[in-house]
Amino acid sequence: MDVITGYITAHPSVFVLGVILIVILLVTFMFKSLIKLVLIMLFILLAASAYYYVADPAKMPGKVKESVELFKAGVHELGDKSRSFVTDSKELFKKTKEAPGNVNKLLKESKSETEKEYGHE
Image (cartoon, rainbow, N blue to C red; front, side, top):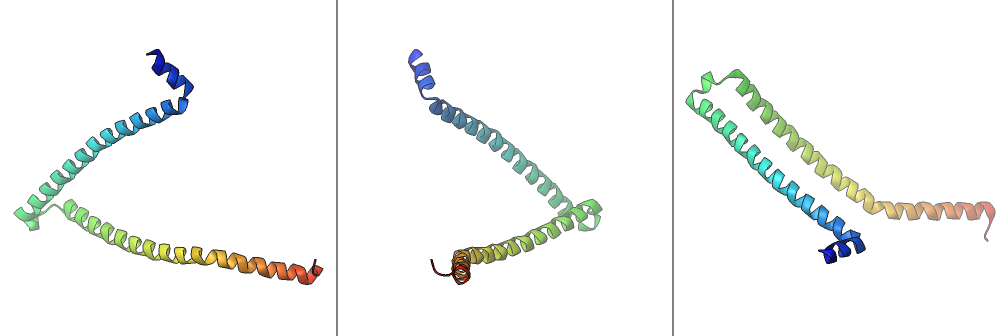
């Protein structure tokens, strides 16, 4: 036991890495259970709404219909935003590729302007 505590006091980074690993494992197990719970609840909600829809679509509660429409609109909006995000990302990537060349061009222009103003050194 003294060897372990001596090693940890001599190498505190090993202790920190061990604590981080334990925390990551605990968080993973907690969220794994939470994710399972959320998926089960979604499945139950989906099954209940499907039952109401299949049993009698005309008597389907108005709020459920509103929720379905809201969900459809949200999915559509999310799709539009993701498409615009992709196009914006592509444009930004192109601009970042061009940026070093533009900076070099500006530096050359400013160097030539200073040489004109102050002469060659």
